[in-house]
Amino acid sequence: MPRELTDLPFADLLEPAGAIAREGEYDCLRFDDAVLTAPDAAHTVFDQCAFRSVQVDGGSLRGARFTEAWLHGVRITGTDLADAAWMDAEVVEGAWSGVEASGTELRRVEFHNCKLDSVNFRGAALTKVRFVDCVLRHVDFGGATLNEVDFAGSEISALMVRDARLTKVDFRGRRHCASPKGSPPCAVRSSPRTNCSTSPRRSPRPSDCWSNRSRAATISAARG
Image 1 (cartoon, rainbow, N blue to C red):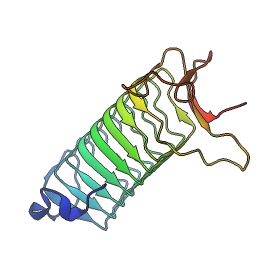
Image 2 (spheres, helix red, strand yellow):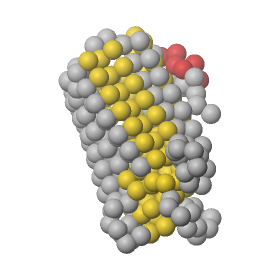
Image 3 (spheres, one colour):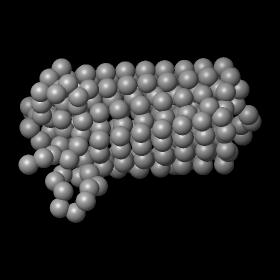
Image 4 (cartoon, rainbow, N blue to C red):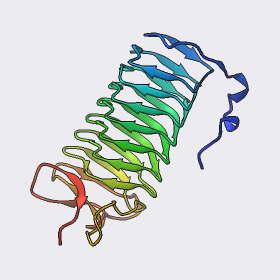
């Protein structure tokens, strides 16, 4: 279950935040109902911060660090988040569209009821990350490392995993892709170079992870 703002262990310490500056350091601040247009906030540090109903359009948060951050209803569009670091963070009812997140490190991060569309996670490292009841469309994990990642209740389409390393990645709880009536459900397709282990409890079934001869790897509608 995603947490509410009042559930956060640092909720009583949060203070209203002002503007965000490049390479700034922010600790125990609350960002509410803000619109950030083309922010120049590369290498900014957010430690135990809360974001609620914030919209970020374009700009750069490249190399930013989010530690114990809580984001609720945050929309990020066309923003550079490459090489950012997320640790012990929670993203609830968010929307990421056209986000550049290559080289990002995510450790113990949960996404709840989020929509990720055309997000680039190439070369990223995800450890103990959960996508719960999310929608992922045209998300690229090419060359990324995914360890203990699950997609419970999530809808997935056109997920790219070319040359990715997948260990203990569980797609079993995902929902079928949204597709025209009569189309077959999604299936996992990965290149021979992809290490795909869907669960530590058993070997993957073909419906969880199948290899084809193509180097390109996608999650797409299975052909009969």
